[in-house]
Image (cartoon, rainbow, N blue to C red; front, side, top):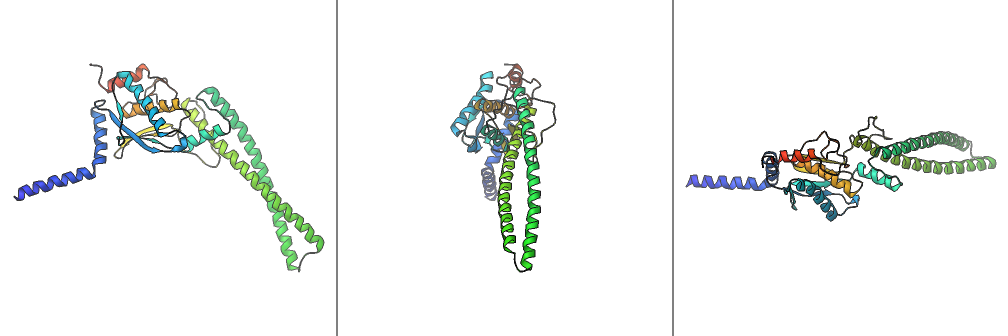
Length: 312
């Protein structure tokens, strides 16, 4: 009787552990299945974090995801991904400086495309904006220095006259005029500071996009520097990661729906277990720049090899 009780107790304990850790266990099972039995079962995906500042609805986002997954599925006529509200592969839309920079450039009328011509245009704008900023900064610093000197002189004179018992009418009128000047100049300096901050934001946005183009176009130049500190390292429009916490695709930036679909297609390739390819025209080229529109023969060969379809 004790033996039966002990067995029942162990079974209940195992069941409780499985129930409590069912989510991470399901994630681990999904990762192992994809590693050792690739393409055997469709990978279930779902929406994770979703930032509405991208201006795309969840329905539209799911439609674009469907376009991206079908790119791979059509190439081998096999269902590889399927949507499920609690799917193991979480797809996140994360808004940060990358998308903010692209949007800011749109707001000031700068159109960006993934071409060398667009890069050259942005570089020229950057040079002009940088020169304008430095000129304004020099003026600002000069006016601040003059303001501080006159303010210090004014305050010392007021203190001196107060110690003497007060100012004459002429001194009072002169100091009143100086006070009005200082108040007006202080307001103008603040306006200048606001204008400089605006220019800094635009230049930094331009730098983020320029560095993205340097990466996506594989241009051999030094990284452009932001004003007032760095805004992050390598520019990535999307990433795929997996681990004990699960599997995720993070999307950080896209200019249009077509580019979003192409970035997602690249990350879906990683979710299938595909590595980067040397062919610059391949979707799985190491630079995930959202430019390559169609799977190349190398992409399809890599997928067929991964899914063990050559012998069929």
